[in-house]
Length: 443
Image (cartoon, rainbow, N blue to C red; front, top):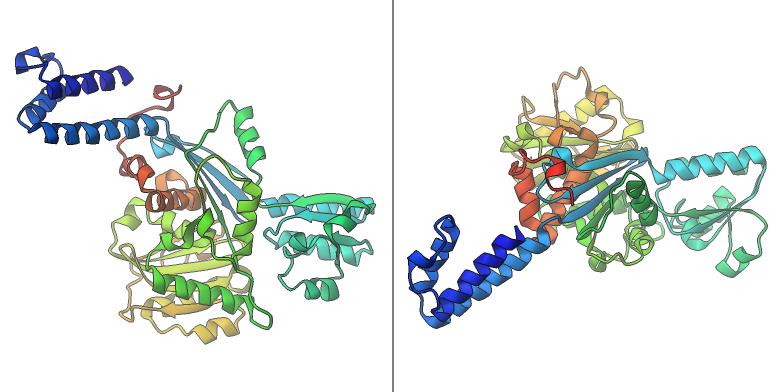
C-alpha cells in the first residue's frame, strides 16, 4: 500500500515538472496514475501545485489513519464495557470486553475489609457511587471507621458536610491521610494503565489516536438544589443549545466545571498521548442504539436505555431530539414504565409528575405525538423490564452487540468531535469493511 502511494506521488511530481509528457509513459496497469496525468497535465502550473498539495495532504492522512485505533470505555453501575475500534476492520470484528464496573470492584473490596474488621481510608478522585455507597454504609453500621480525602468523599455526595454528618465518614486532608493506620483504597472510574495491561495480556497492543470514556454525571449541584433537578436542567439546557446526542460529549479541555465526575476521569487519564473525549453514558447508549439497522430506518423513534440505576429515553426525529425522559430504574416496574413511555410518546407527560416520583423529569420539544407501533426501541442491561410489554419494543442490537451500545455511541461522538478521524469511523459504520477479516490487517 505504501509503495503504491509512493508511486502515485512520484507520478504527480513528474507530471508537474513536465518529465512525463504523454499518457503512453504511464504504467498501463494503473488507472489511477492515468487519471492523475489527465487532471494535472491540462492544469496551469499553479493549479498543479495546489492539486499536488491537496494530494500530499490526503496521502498523509490515509497513511496516518491506516491502522488507526480508538479506545472506547463505557462505565456503568454494573459493568464497564470496552471496545477497540480499528480502522479497516468490520465493527463486528473489533476487540471487546465486558467487565465488572469500578464501583462494583471497590464495593467488593469494602465488604472484604468489613469482614476482616478493618478501618478504611479512601483516597483518589470522585467516582460513581451506588454499590460503593451501600457497602460503605454497611461498613459504618458494623462499627468500623471510614476516612476519606475530600475528592474521594464526593463519591458519596458533593456536600461534604452531609457526608460527614449523615454518613459518619471522617473527612481528612492528604497530609492527615499519610499518618492514618487504615486499609487504603484508591477510588477512580477510569484506570487506563490497567485497561492497557488487560488487552496486552491477550496480545493486543493499544496505541490509540483517541480515547472516549462514558460515565453518568449528575453534576455538582449548588447547596439546597436537588441533584435530580440540577441534572435534568443540564440535560434541557444542553439539548436547547445543541440539538443532537453528541452534544453530551466533550473534549477534555472543554468540560463544564460542574461535571465533576467527568473531570475526575480526565484527572485519572493523566494526559494520554491523544485526544480524550468524555461523554454522558446514557445519551451515548441511545446514540449507539440508533446504529441498529431497524432503528436507523425509522424517521421518528423513541429509544429507551434501561440501565441498572437509571432509565433514560429520547424521542428522536432523524438526528434531532424531540424530547427526553429520565427516571430511576429501581423505582419503576413494567406497568409504570409503559405508562410513562406512552405519555412521553403522546406528548402529555409532565415533568413535575416524574419528579414527584423521585425521577429526574421529562421534557417535550415536539408536541406532535409519536406512534409507538414499530417506533419504540430499547437497549441497556435491564431492557427485559419491557419483555412481553404491550408496547412490543424493538431490541436495538447495533453491530450484533447490545452491551456495546454505549461504546458505539462514544465512537459516533468521536466522529462528530474529531473530524480528522471521521471517515474511517463512518466507513466502518456503513459496512465498507465487512468483507475484511481481523488477520488481514494484523500488523
